Image 1 (cartoon, rainbow, N blue to C red):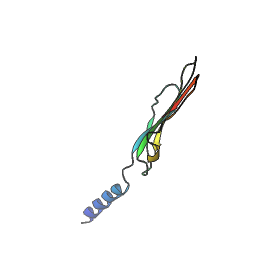
Image 2: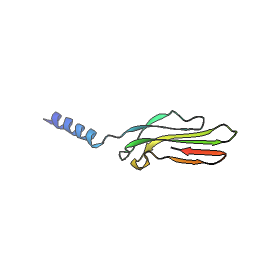
Image 3: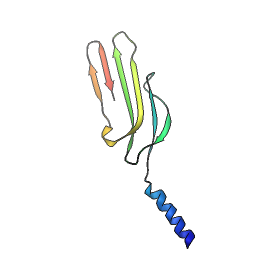
Image 4: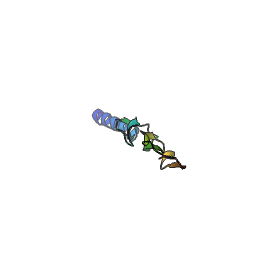
Length: 92
């Protein structure tokens, strides 16, 4: 009986911890992608975020920045874009 109670206690301990997700965490400026270690997010986090910035000035090579991390729900599918005669900027 004690073994059964101990097993049930251990089971509840694992269940009560919730289902935290893991996200890749990294940042870089050489391209539109990066790679890094997986990190366990807080239990309130429901998704992973990848933010990519692309900036181009006429006559110059494009500049990139990428950031990957845990994200809250409010950060899904955001796109900012600006274009003018000699410059283009986009963040997604």
